[in-house]
Image 1 (tube, rainbow, N blue to C red):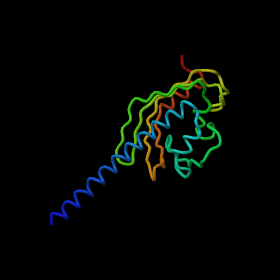
Image 2: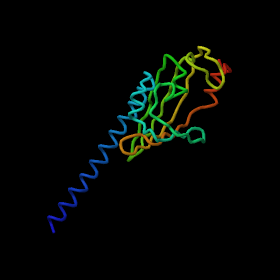
Image 3: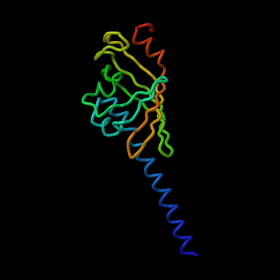
Image 4: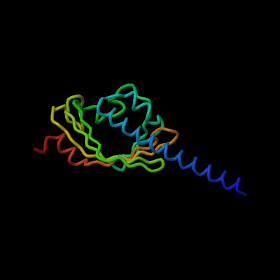
Length: 159
């Protein structure tokens, strides 16, 4: 009886440790994503995001369709910006989910955005991402942002 109880306790500890270890690994990968967005490292994005994953933005779900050859292909909005700065404010993880609140700023110099030619304007947006991990990769990226404020900056409608 004691042997059975100890075995159950050992399995419980291993399961708890395993879940904690994978949650920590998922948080580390989320941090890597934001570094890659700042530096333009498509290799990291291809390694961390599942090729068959999905981006959920503004009520639309789009397949990732990776791996990607260029940073712009992997992250078109971010790829249209140069001199990018990314600040992460909070990172919270539980189970297979990691939530990140961040701000991304960059100069609109690389490609058109929303039909607006590169203007050189500094564009800043606040984001909330919830990443869902499966098999050690991000399978779902749920994105919320201040889309109206970002669009107004792109179109030059703000000071």
